[in-house]
Length: 285
View (spheres, rainbow, N blue to C red):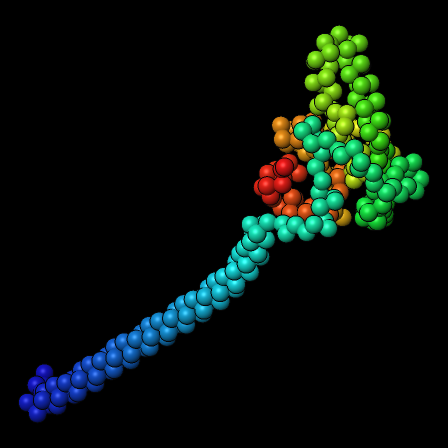
């Protein structure tokens, strides 16, 4: 067996060294390139995340700004309505005719006599000053397929007294004492000498499908419409539910009183009845 010469062994070692060195360089270059690539990816991801965050913040800010503007507009509208309510209703002497109050404590002046105008096809009359708004309200109801009927308008003081006495007599026949009968009748009818119908400013309305002056009228389409829209024409639901102790009259969802558009809107917004309005404005004499 022949032995390698020392020179050959040196050549082999040199070659191995060169090869290993080259491999190490390649490995180092690979590691460096991979590290740089990972760093670039991390930077790109960070930039994308930052951009997304900025966009989200911008969108949120825009949304908040838009919502803020909407809220501000709503608050301004509410503030305007509240300010209008807080300022109260500006009363002009020429408007007081439709705000006159009559109840058990405030009788109608003996010389009060309205100028009347007949409601076509209804067999009833009203103060001529409320004729146009009443006819407009009835016409708008009919255009929407409703069938309002004015079953009671102006009454003379004599007729009001006759109706009251008839109701008292009916209760007495049922076994109630005269005092009890009077108290019960007062919850349903104005006492002699008073009564909104005697002013010519009030009407009782029912409908063709419900021809009764009962609480059930409130559940009819006509009753619901009137409660919602009567104030647009200057009328109010005069004897509302929850106001019985103030008005002295039981709930009457069919009884509508003209007070003028401004006053009707004010009473609707404040939720007051006419008695409360008189107290607020110090109109009681």
